[in-house]
Image (cartoon, rainbow, N blue to C red; front, side):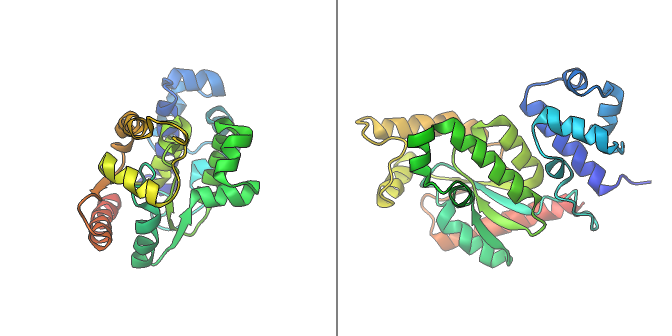
Length: 257
């Protein structure tokens, strides 16, 4: 009998979150009181854990139960499929420009995760960093991500450039969404950021461009973990959308096989 897609999805999510924390299966067993053998079955998509076991897993991995089970979507293969599409990349990659056009092409809504955070907190992102610091922002980023991924309706979402360095948030995103890295040359990132009138977090820094290059280099290993990558430098917006839509169609087909 084939595994239920909900259990397959649960297993992939638990495995991704565990590895993102650098834990062995024994580490997770000690934190949850669940045997390693049963955890192996969970991660393999063959175990059907009780509500209490799900609660223990969610608590240990610091996610909501809904996030573990994929928002409760129970249609054919729905739980195993990653219906949301997340655009990754440093500011200036083109996420806010490409995202709405891709969403329109695919017939879904477009969401800026930072906009969701601003609505929830009543603060602009810049104000948030200035008044409360990065930890405050990351907490609310995680809450907004949990809420988004629990939504039944698929979307294209542009996430903040630094989400990839938060292990649990990035693992959760990769487990429950198809990810696409919008690549660009450092000079293009810089010119686009300047055109937006926003140099955060490099404001008042004479080495701003060097800092941007360093940040991009630091984050590139994480961005490379995306399901697909599209080069935006030297291409028109229409070309980027066409290439991205085609690549995502391929990954969707592979996901169903």
